[in-house]
Length: 282
Image 1: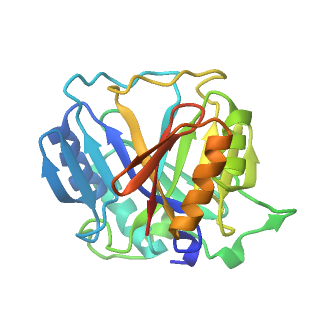
Image 2: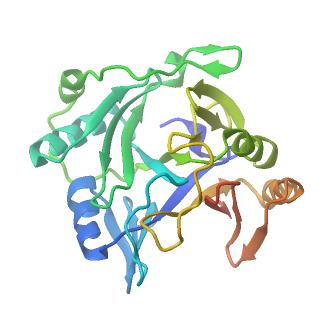
């Protein structure tokens, strides 16, 4: 694992989503994805891979409604595995389980795609070494090509025992209603750099990563913010290296007109499409 998810970079740490049935979703996230329960309370469960670091929080609002289509919010959250061998073990597990999946080679990474029982998108991937990424005028080459599934399966014959402890949240991909406004917020406000373009999508990162955040208008220009009680994204965290870096961002997003709310342990804001962001410290 390289250093794109360590200080001084700003990166995604944890994601929180709404689900319709917490018990049913926990079965999926434990048995299919391979996460462990870190905390459990009424209507909420925090999941981990190492027994100490929150990675994904599931919440079941009492008045929860199904996922609302053609809105902003989660396209997918992306779980980054330490090695190709780990992806091999996970792929074999998925194939043996019979759970539906998609796959792609993005040049910078090899990825598997699936949806949870409520339609929340999930990517599980491994990065190629950054020395193999191709950059041109500040943009990294990415594409969607056929995955070498047989090559991945040949990497390891190890037994699947869940996600390895070194697994982290690699990136998040979001639906937005206005690409230009969102791009301004994530660059001028949060300080991310544009590293790639795709039709109706922009990819952003810090520290030269292929992307920590992606935004798109694939749900339609002007897509509204979904109701807070619908299945989908609650919030995600951005991890800052220190208080000074976070305060600088707070000032800039306020100058862009975004509201900021300070709580114990985090500072919360929202992008122009209503995607909630909790800014936390390492």
